Length: 225
Image (tube, rainbow, N blue to C red; front, side, top):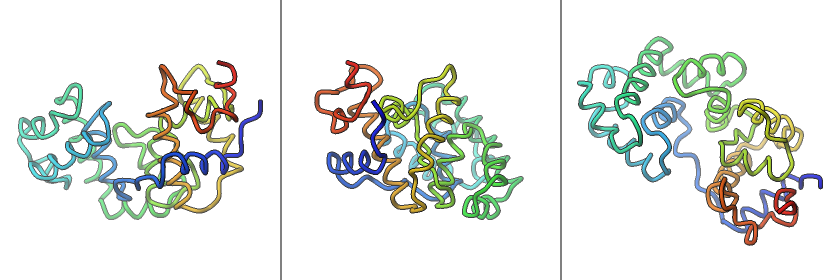
């Protein structure tokens, strides 16, 4: 069966979940820090870890690089596996931010385009999906920037097939939905958040709740089950 219209799917999700939460920030530097300070944790834990970083170390590149390593590791300890490795990633991100300059980094994210993507992808943890998300948050890209949860929803709805690599699946889904994307930042951000939440709570990787899914009637995966 063909995939539903993206606009209709997003409207159904908003009806089911309500208005989505906004991005935690539009600042690319803050989002880069959030990405690297925690790993495979829920949003509440990620927020807690970021607040700990703010209060115990600071978020400027100079503060991160000048902090004793033990304090940096301790500040982000609750953020999942391997705190020392995450601390190293924060230090590397701070070094890159010093080279680029935070003012220039933020200006690039607002402008968008290939030059911005090239710079953003220098940071640890930021590949094509991450760069898309940062530009979406900054309001400079027409993209859904689906994370792994949202991407799973798009694949199951039939917008793309699951390829051998995550990057190929991501690109296939991005290309498939591109013609349906409006140049409306608020709608794109809401769609990103709604698809992500749906993948987290209902269209789960294991034990998906197809019997209560608001998209089940238009979902190839649900019909196949």
